[in-house]
Length: 476
View (tube, rainbow, N blue to C red):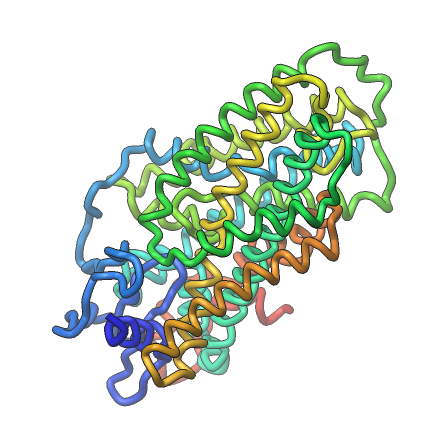
């Protein structure tokens, strides 16, 4: 078993090889696939490779043939739309009233539509680039980091040396973003549970005690490395999110004050907080498949469709789903701020009456959903960080111990950051402004607009359509 673990991680941790020009894609969401730089089919599976997870049962990864036109268990447009909606409704939507507080009603509503439109446009760019580059290199599915790497490899010759740094840059921000989400979850769960317990206990316990208490089970649950085992947690989180949102709207729509009592515009000094929270909401959703953020969810959704052409287009699944998501965000933000005004907190659940048992159900439901989602968000940085880390160890036993040690250290790191910044609204704005904005708005335009045909002209730097390949990166 230990030898299998070592072998599997050695394969995941390999970098670009010389000689035959083969590359092992150790991406965050898909199994490693060997491909030829000339676009050949992936290498055949070796005899010593096993699909069995070295630590906990069967692995979810399985090699997929490049020439498969339709994936197994392909989803319909309706099923894909449901997955997209589920993936974009999470803890971020509960922070939208706080974002509206930092902008005002009028500016907040207009800004939300503009930010959403730009984010959706960037997603279309990333999906188009993924398809274009996938056809060039012979891959049906590509993750975010692979798209960034191939964008440079298909670009002008002088920029191809930046392919590996581009992949590393995306992976770095994926790790920062996902661990940032986990830090938000520590504060979110602790504050909501504390409010429930404090309403029934005469002596209030410090927030840090709750943080430590929830970290202990998280450490054990984050030792699970098989994503398939986490599926029941995702299903339970979906149910809890729906229950919590329905009850929350019941409170928000009751006894609303007139709109004239709320500010149309807050102040310029508060707009950065509004921007950070809004970007977090768009990027920081919970993902039932363990993918990394909104960017990482949309690519596999399209790849799994029976007719991927229905995903794009002005009335495609992506535009339809994200329009509905923007409507939900706008409704929660508008009615939440209209109901509580400047007294709104980092999560709208914290504003619900503490003496009402139905409000306590909302807090526990949302806290439970976020608690179960922590492991899914934590899965992505583990897939990125563990392979190169344990490659430094030679003993099979030391490799396994190193993996568990790194997982534990990452969980404790999220606890440390949450303890240093226990203000939920500030943590959400910080994560959104620093890392989520990079993945949602800045990096997608860096990918090619002109296609991968530059690789065919390897004798000289390309111009024309391929000259647009990394135009944004060049401008930066």
